[in-house]
Length: 428
Image (cartoon, rainbow, N blue to C red; front, side):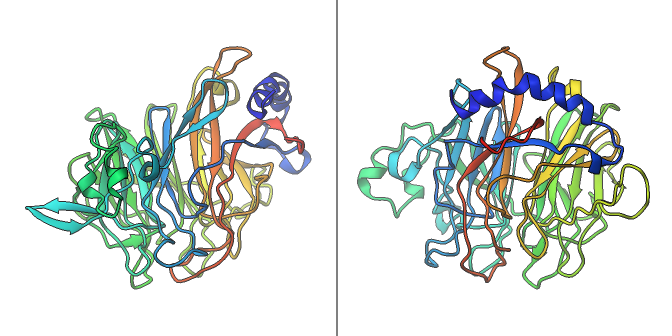
């Protein structure tokens, strides 16, 4: 039995156990739930941190990032890989496009603008990514010698042009031209400052029944921490000031989205750093009112029962909210933030009750402590019950803070799934 199937087969017992631990009273007296399982299918690219992930349908796309133990010309990446389910409770990763011609097309080396060939998408770390209207978008970040503000659109149904990749050998280019491995095109630059370690999320607007991406925060070339946000509709960016600033300057925050019981889809931003202060601010954005709401700060600022003296000071974490279906609805709407750290990497994992606005400690991430990891959620069938389940995964990362000038450290490609309702089992 594979580790994936073992995880599914344990689910019925684990969920029964979980019911007794959903109260917000004195979490110190509760057993910490959450089982991390390392899967056999590791991220197939070079070990790295500061990568990005966007998801189209039930396929996640992971790429860019850096490995600062490599030589300067190789340490930042433009390659991408896709990941989806293999139909048997496991993962199926794509191959490397530049070597096989049947993976996911890497960001282009050059592009043509007004008949002039220009250098295109630099390898980068600390970029942002999102999916909107069936396409993926990647922009911003650090390229090893400068901060970036360019943005690129990925069409998964496109055919790549070998002319966009002049460094590839002729025998490799000969494979392209008919392979539907996705194509990239440059879109309008980000209207804010060039920056690194910003956040992005996509929300649905009930007003006009459209989806919009929101991008903001980050750190610019002059080491300023930013708080401005901009909206992207798939064609153009909003002007400055059209979206209000978040109110707390920061970089390295984490973000997730959730559609609440009031029918509004909110964007949540947590953590980060302003270079000096530990950020315990926690806000959510309402696209219907175009405004930010302050939620309870994620530290011991009051003696409410829910608080239980927790302090969630996390920078360069990864966060996700489980979508609601018949399975997750049984246990309430939950979001999670994991790994990251402040002053060093962490394994810390916290669960957020989206309707109750409180946090509960979960079992620490079981892999090596890290920052700058990515996460994604795939919908999979429970092979025992046939029920649809949303399975979170965490992969890549670094054990260092990956400032733009640092080098060395450890970088990772191991991939872990997380079952928040199951008791920890060290044998997994």
